[in-house]
Length: 206
Image 1 (cartoon, rainbow, N blue to C red):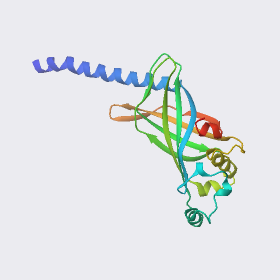
Image 2 (cartoon, rainbow, N blue to C red; image 1 turned 135 degrees about the vertical axis):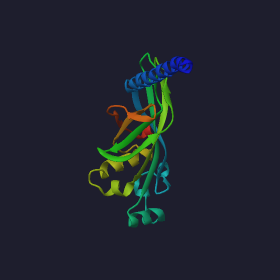
Image 3 (cartoon, rainbow, N blue to C red; image 1 turned 120 degrees about the vertical axis):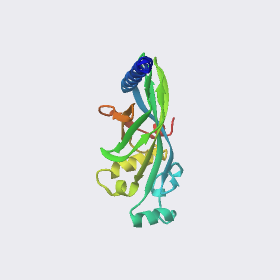
Image 4 (cartoon, one colour; image 1 turned 180 degrees about the vertical axis):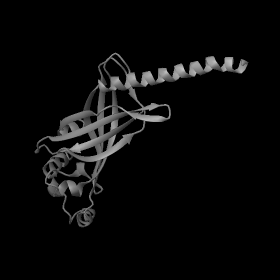
């Protein structure tokens, strides 16, 4: 009986702490949903292992010059990889934070890639900022041959190469924060959507 009396306050304290932790996560995730998101730049952009920034235009992608590109065309596998940097600004008076999030990257309304960021993201209130890198890995062969994405993909690559003779490319990033509630993972309701026309200046960080 004495042991029960001893552990009862401790159990109540643990339950109270757990509830406070859950409430804090929910509050911080909600504040993250109220933040402003902006695609600021892109780096480490490679197409079949070719540094896209070294290309002046798509005509430089000559299969005779790049044998890995020729092999990719034959195998229908042309890997595209990039790191897209997203800036988050917190205009609220609360800390915005999350420990994990899922993201999707879309081009011309077609999903290119989905992945996870497994690190704490925290943005201080009152205009604080944080930069979150999200990775993109996709098969460019499908993008180059699909009528729905060919034009948008061409514009995207031209912008990433720094060309100033192309129109902006529309890129969409959908973010879904994940809450850790005890041993369970609970997804934030809906997605935080970033719809943005990106130019060569934005993608090059200028």
